[in-house]
Image 1 (cartoon, rainbow, N blue to C red):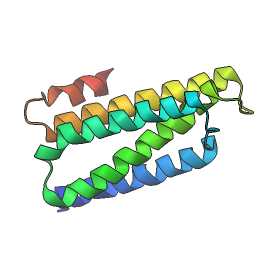
Image 2 (cartoon, helix red, strand yellow):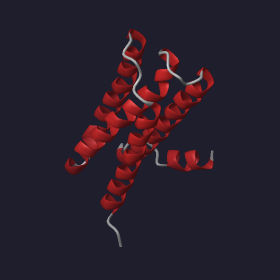
Image 3 (cartoon, rainbow, N blue to C red):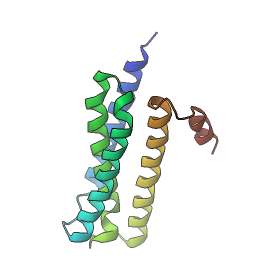
Image 4 (cartoon, rainbow, N blue to C red):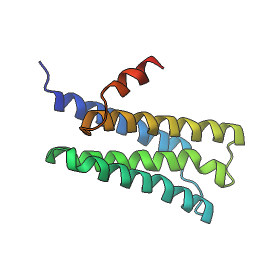
Length: 131
């Protein structure tokens, strides 16, 4: 028997490391007005989602969820950065990376809401799995 919290924290840690590898692979976008606006969008979304979840998180989950939220927001920014700055990546590859990050963030949003928010139907996970 493995306690649920350990399974969750292990999964969170593995995905966190994966996002750090994505950040390294995508590279940091050049700091321009457009890339900073994109950063504000991704980190703003992470901020809003954390504050939606925060009242429903047990105390020992708050810090790991904040860290994960920030890292996945940075991953989204790095993935989308080639769309708003001049990078060596082609526009189609940049669009695929940006879209992939949005799908990943959407998936994590559905999982987080259905796991932690009492008013969200747990069936969202099942529906997502079937899609």
